[in-house]
Amino acid sequence: MPDCTVILDIPASIGLERAQKRAATDAPDRFEKERLETHEKRREAFLDIAAREPERCHVVNALQSEEAIAVEILTIVRQLMSPEGHARMPEAAHHE
Image (cartoon, rainbow, N blue to C red; front, side, top):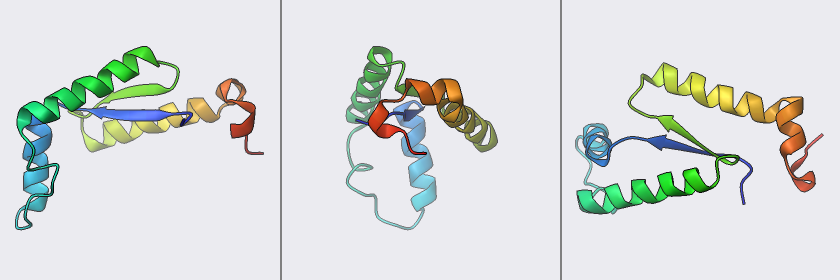
């Protein structure tokens, strides 16, 4: 089980639109071929996990700019690596 999971949250329709723009000339991969409904159910499942495990899971709004997303993720990781956050990690996960 990971100590930290970052979930980049975005409505499935927007995520698929972005993936299609990135892939421009490439054929869609198996995930991109799935129905919008399937993607939205998967999103909801990840958000449910995050709600049940708030100490481990961190939801980041992926509608923000790339810079804002990066800053938020860096903040999450820095908090985890701080002495207070480091103390919360299981003993086996401590790397000195």
